[in-house]
Length: 328
Image (cartoon, rainbow, N blue to C red):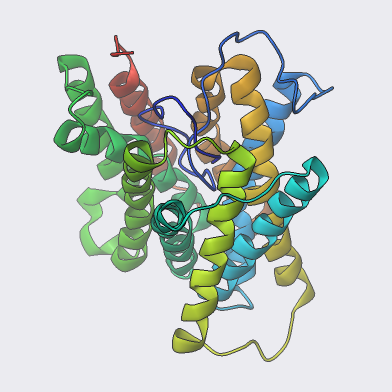
């Protein structure tokens, strides 16, 4: 989701964000002067939920004609173009400094290149519904990482209980009692790896980029740009250029980048600035629901009882783990 802030990053932000962390709003009811949104924040919240929820369906459509790395590259490319266009309109510049760009390169790999690619590869063998549900485990990974690495985020009984509940939900989603007869283990592991990568990336951003003086749009635009370059270097080594360009999958990739990455960042930044990060993060709980409905209704994917039940348990665990008092 969005750019780097001068304040500490929320410990469990929405996992599908394209860049670093959004800022905390000083007055939740006051709209952001820079964005100047005319639409009510609830409408933009619903739009953001739909865009991110449908992203997993778009990944599935894209991989029907293109290699997973091509889908990820297109997602980064078109997302970067949207943010660069916004920067041009606002007459803002990209960040400067070799050290800063080095941190952006690492965060781009952890928050964009790696998870986008892993989800694309995962959806070759698992349903988009499962990928969307697994995506909701990112706050649990973030919480687990905070216990181990972040001294200002000590575990409490409530949060440990939330982790345990969330883990039980993951086992329910995966149908652990079915053994090898359940979902493809390699694809599922890739999706879980993508979700964990978001958590590691957010922790890295929190430690290295939270004090940046540049705007959120500039930081996120730079991050997506360097991520695009990283994949451009890797593409020739692992795959060849497409022989043809199927229209529907191509449109899916364009929408995934322009809407699911570029526009989604702008929507979330405006929401965080207007209603605060806590309310904006609630979009995380709608993503698996929308991804499941989209996959079943539009792709005809089969849904067993344990997937929605497990997803509800995962979200309950994530909410429980994030609740309780926090150090400012």
